[in-house]
Image (cartoon, rainbow, N blue to C red; front, top):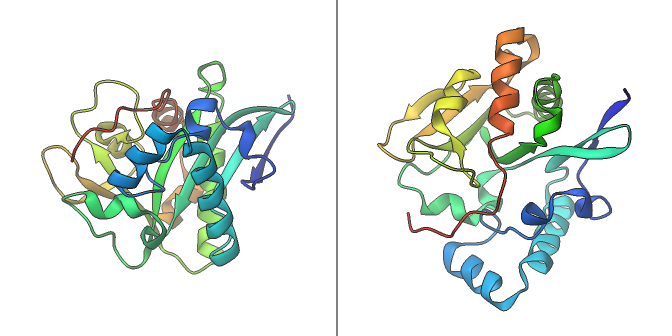
Length: 205
């Protein structure tokens, strides 16, 4: 089984699942996001966001392939590039952290270590660029797949709560800890990245 991880670009953006390819939950503020979905321009807005971040900041994601089949991805960027992040009651992110926006692994490919490899690849990339941590907004009341990852699962893979909240705690993972994960963390991470499976409803924060 051949597997590889490559940086996300406009060329391989179509390899993301359709529901993620046209989701702009994180890339736009809540009002603009809802307007783009209603106007049917979400996919174009996603392309524009990826292009702008690539030009200004650099790589902001990884796509995982197994035998040349796209099976997962992870998306991340400094919070300044993530308008939705300011809408959360536990913002702002720490100045030394990059935001883990969302991630996904197809169900048939979970439990094979891809989650660990994806996050370790991101960690190495960000460490080279001078960042110390990844932070994420978790959903403490997570019940169904959505753009927010379950807070419970984030905690299971090593994130620590840095600002508690009954619904949207902010969690942090020190990047150096990801380079020596054990098998139990790897399995938990695969479950975590498999949690995002469909485009969420745009619910108010």
